[in-house]
Length: 342
Ligand SMILES: C[S@@+](CC[C@H](N)C(=O)[O-])C[C@H]1O[C@@H](n2cnc3c(N)ncnc32)[C@H](O)[C@@H]1O
Image (cartoon, rainbow, N blue to C red; front, side):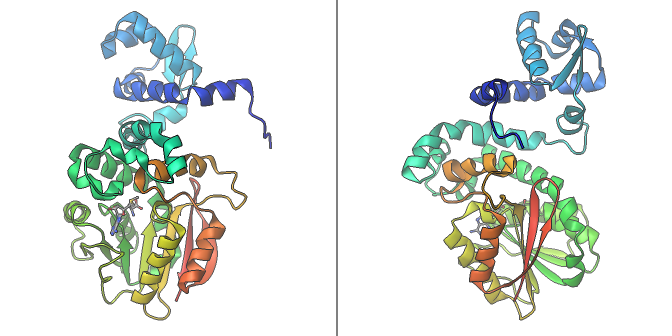
């Protein structure tokens, strides 16, 4: 594997903030949607359709072409195939809401990364109203940010949970607690894929309210319910045989993750399962890129204490909480599941 950065890569990294703004402009100003509808437009045709003058459109289209987000053939542009799939609104797989989270939550707060490193604290949280020490508890004071956040989580979950739902382990579970289950996106996919599965979402009041609406919309109120509360303090639901922590471990410190897993252990019967599902860092701490670039957000913004931990660290959290660890289940998009049995 090539392990030396070259000049072009260094330019891309140094100007990462500009590269992101070009990408986000391509989404927000509907360049990608316009080219999806009508491939092969010239710069001036695009400018006219999206309401820009020719000169700023030239700067935008030159940047998008250099980033290879659009392909230029003569003087005509079309979307790169991955842009067509992931950055156009008509594509069911689009990750536009995740980019909204990058634009409105990660981007403005990462200016405080260095200070967060020095203070070992989420200094970037100062950009959002409220007194709480983590972003989750500040969401009720910041309705726009709350919407951006929940839309992004829902989109992230949708893109990862189709692979989660294919795991046979859910056929061995009758009542699953989705701890920090958010707006119910994961619970709905799991319940749809496993007809005998009952799910209880254990999350804050706001998330549970949103989840109830979605669950009713999916016609699954008989099999998915909610249990509003704080999973560090409040009792877990009764009569359960599994607990899922989806995209949860990266939020907290190793000590808090272990304490949370221990709470799940105490709530489960003998033979009960805990499932840890999120992006997993490589054991050699070199990648993958998604995990390495995802970690600063947890320090600077979310809680000031988490990161994308390695597979091995997750295994040690499970063991410390008392679980017998089973095999590593590797999923696409740098995700994985570790299942522990009580
Ligand atoms: C990163 S989102 C994960 C959502 C979902 N599990 C998924 O996989 O996409 C974290 C969720 O944990 C919830 N959460 C954070 N702290 C919590 C707490 N102390 N008790 C219950 N839920 C909490 C948040 O409200 C949010 O819905």
